[in-house]
Image (tube, rainbow, N blue to C red):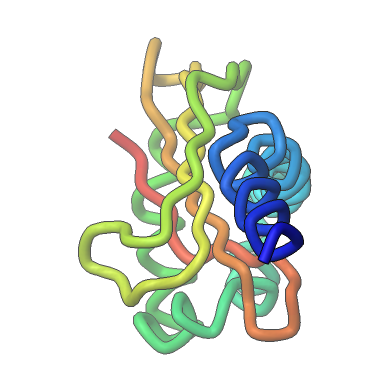
Length: 141
């Protein structure tokens, strides 16, 4: 009986300890941010088709490749070159609005474009069933 109590107490401490969970999530955030930054670099370079190819299945199911290429060109083209991009926030969520439950990192950047002094870019990688992170959403405000 004592060993069961010890295990239960240890489990309660591990689950309650913010550091135990934060370390795992921090690793996930960093991995997702690396994927998001590489994906954004492709978009910045005008490789819109390749950005669709490398996106999450959820993203691809939401818009076909040709429509994505036309839409992103229409949105990004007038903004000009991305001159700077500074991380504002990166938050883990399992229940983002308008998306199925899963593991997501919502990353916000303050971005300065050539023709727009300040924008907010929101890039949302999600963990795919194989464990990899891929971009599932992109918004410019």
